Length: 503
Image (cartoon, rainbow, N blue to C red; front, side, top):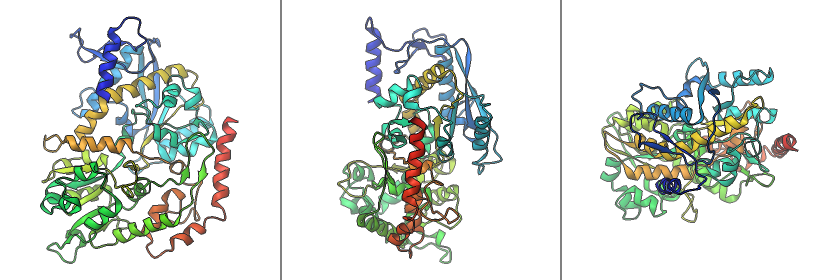
């Protein structure tokens, strides 16, 4: 679809009297007069007089928006080239303002810096790219501008559902037509943090898993046929266990599935079609209520996670890097991993070839494959202290559209290339995952929507599936009922806070 769009844009530019965006020379090929970049946005010609667009980022995630000129990393090269193209098109400079963190586990410093700047009306940045669950804490403080009504160019594309502003993602964080955090294709972490099912092609082939599911030759065919469902996954893998040489170490076995039990389990709620907040972005959101079908689904997940064929990592103290290594060292046929782990050496250098699948559907009647995302993905916000939204909106619209046309597919391919071997089927699966990403207001408001006291482990509404599976003897219905003395009121207080901002 993107390539068709690129062709139509080229044709458009050859026609007289068109309103298409201008072409610019490829900034990395200054000596080739016939090399141009096609811009698929509708911003048009702008000259911002060499001004800066300053973006507040966390130092660990600066790579998401700023590439280094001499880097050998594919993403760095692509983003450096893009930012030069933006500079040449708009006469503007993209400038990083990183918050210094104390290490990879520091998820608070960026929030603190931004909050302090807002409180003191001393924000020297035009745009913020912050962890989703952290940025959400600042929404109802009225620190952010409304993407759908106050940010030029972007507001029109978001409302129109432009491909570089994924519609489902942005609708999910919109309340009655007003939106204060957004995701565009410039948010590389919203790609990387999406959950996937990774599989060892050699082991899955050797054990004829696709054949046993339905006489398919590959797992890709299972997905394409709509057969990759919760029950199919459970029935195929729940009893698969091959004991290792060390019978005292469960990590030495070969399992059918390895499941990461925190955000990896959160993603199952979304993949199976559940939303904790019923929200179409237009009408007043409503609080979700679990049904008997929900309880049955959770019991199925519980049974699967505690079966002998599954290595369920919750509460075992493993990092995601540990789990990626566990999979790479041939201890699981399938594993839940965010896409970001597939670009790491431990996966790219593993002995066997690997493939990527979306999370399973609830059943064959579910129309799309869906997936959740680690809540560390970046969302974009424009601070209320920004007095040149024309410049910010133009630049962000243009770089988002650029990523959609020139970067995404190449980046997908770089993630799943194994030992210099391309895997077009896995690239196609990533397209399915991207198209089915699901978000929820609860991700931005964990602390505002608690089922049980906030000091309790995993007590937030947005972690309902995680909690229910992590505590297998707990009565799920009773757990839900325990929050009904305060949760509905807390929810409507939150929605009132939103509505007060735009009333």
